[in-house]
Length: 549
Image 1 (cartoon, one colour):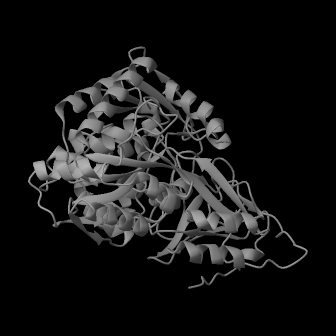
Image 2: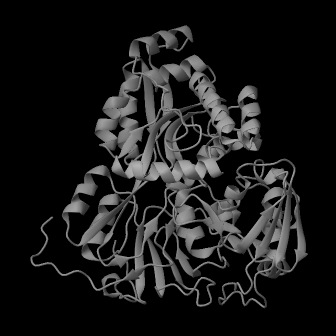
């Protein structure tokens, strides 16, 4: 609770403002000022072009080390701060923004790309234009027509103009209260126009997703699918060379195995421990734990294109059948907060007075009967294959819901896939009910509702839901500049979601990152972004007696 109170001030203020791994150098032998750092990670990235990514796994393992954006986030993790743009001005009507780029920002140099120039306005124009224009020559050559935000924030960009080599002007169709925060999102990466031209000439533009070039603190070396990603320090990073020489993301899906590798020194840092593993971390003198309140929501999404889930009574019945108290005792064990809406605490529009869905199996059975759903009706329930702050044990989570639904006459078949396939199939609409979650990309309430529930992205959304009244409020909230009025709009939207239930909010998670005691300078933000630029390794702490697990 103390941790939540600490971030209450930060987040609300920001919202109102808008097998073992073989290494060349063993992990435990690295020292401050160099060496190799090993991050035991839970999943492979979707690819290395972050503009196409949906998941926090890809943002952490790809965006954070590799890329820069016009704007980033301050140390609090949610306030917008300069990054590749050193300064900017906005017009009085909120429709025009002029960005002044940092001089001397150098691109990565690798064996597949040797840049001839530094970052300039051409790179920014290409990076934003490809997001907003399906017919852009880059996308025609790429064979890619739509990014996660093409139909939402990027669609509101009317023009991107070059004023001079280090000045860019962006004009919006309408004022957008979240525009600057959107530019700081991981999908808003700036890519090299020169590298893109090189790949287009070679007829290999798809290589941009497997052989990345950025301006971030680390440059790409190689990727072994489902095994490891290797980076090395970018020697000419504009904010100073990283304190580590090499960075390795070791893909280790099982959380118990990640913890064991952490104990033995095969990893310096891990992610997404199960609640019962946190106590083991705290009891081990070789380890320490960083915990941060997260801006995330775990939920069930009902595919409203598939009968009988097109009926709100059926969605409500399935929601009422779930024993949330038992679910939280068994699965979350105090590691998350029960959700009463899609917007997490401390975000603009969150309503502390709203009550969540009750556990009422009797009413659930009556609603199913009213909807004509017979006892024994079969349905698929998709279970997350990896742990997340908002769902630390996807299989157990699904099994408990399966048992609850059986009590009201619904037979649930649990389905799961490898993480990347799970995400792809879910966005293709193959599921009936899917367990997933959303970690905010920028902390703004629009970022929870538009990417998940807007009519504009219906064909790729998890619920396939579109509601005219909700859509009108989404647009109203996006362009409203007054924070109190915006908050009221989002509370009204939460009321529509509570009535319609295209998604059932379950939990708001907190981030827990176990690490070796010798790790210094690591931080994770409330958005779940990780920063390894300033990390170093001190000599391992010596204990007076061996640790017994």
